[in-house]
Image 1 (spheres, rainbow, N blue to C red):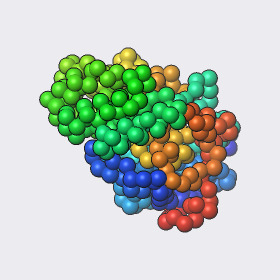
Image 2 (cartoon, rainbow, N blue to C red):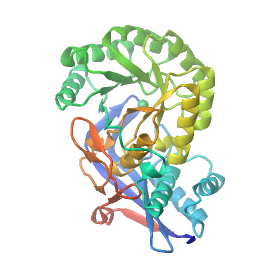
Image 3 (cartoon, protein in one colour):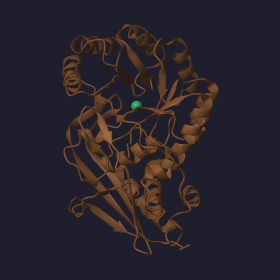
Length: 370
Ligand SMILES: [Mg+2]
């Protein structure tokens, strides 16, 4: 068998304008500041990955990630790109933490492996393409009236589920949901996300007050480090709980599962370090009888395509929050998942992740080649 070697790695700082600033309980985002990794092999193959650093959740930024990426690239250069397990160990030995920047490398390695196998990534991962993936659409924090107007727009656009950002005070959050339900009715499923904005007492109180409003589940009600109290919230809440910021990798997943602290996990490549560890989280979840959601930060359609491949290959993934690119004012991606309207994504059947970045768009961005 032909032996592949990593010849060079290109790091790009990718900025994508948003349609409008988006606000959650942790802060406001004005522009998507992402990173792209391109891994070139000696025989002319290229694998591409993308990551979206979210400083308020993971602690990584685009400028810091750009420098860490150069270091990781130096570590991987000259090695076998198909031995993904070994390359992930190389990265973890070289730099502690930084799962988001590592996820772009992991994604580029999986893209290369699937291209080499001449299979779409979901097939390489053992999946089929029989399920339809419908994303929810997120309403960000604002006044109750503005959030209700946004929710009604998304309902009218045909999204099957709406996700509502909360996490200020019990009074404000209940008023938000009451106003939204008045606008959109009680039928269409909604899920809520407090992004750690409540303390334990407020979380239990608010979730009890929200019981009449037909809510599927609540993401990350309290600060991410308080696993013991997440269990308390789950025990007292009439609404199921989903761990998001408190589950980065498979070790977090195992701990939370053993504690009985959560009903669901939200898997994001930016927290897990990429596809390799996402598979591990989902395996722990499945063994514990916990269903999972796939979620995003502010990735373009490129990383979202990789996420859809992962979802298509794992039956235990039952919820999809794959909407970041729908908030972007620009789409720098060619190929990849196609948006069919009403929340529906269709996977590409081309080998690898099956998408790329428009070279003209990338030419305007800061780059380094190692
Ligand atoms: Mg969340």
